[in-house]
Image (tube, rainbow, N blue to C red; front, side):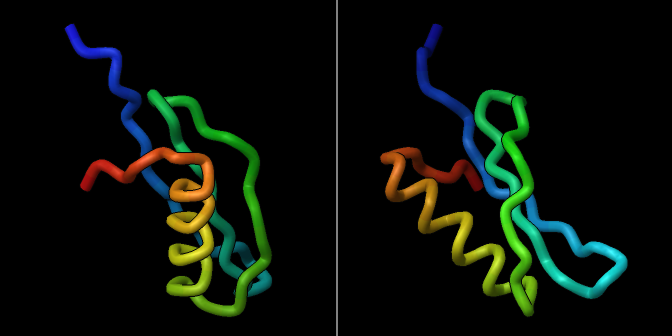
Length: 59
């Protein structure tokens, strides 16, 4: 068995047309972070936070 964490960034749009990201680690979602103007900005910010935390995305 592996002890590797499964990590990814989930991006969603709210009713106010702002974008938010959530870090999902081992199936557990963290808080929503945002708002961002575009989906790409939210995705990039989430991936940067994963990198800063020394976690890698599994895609």
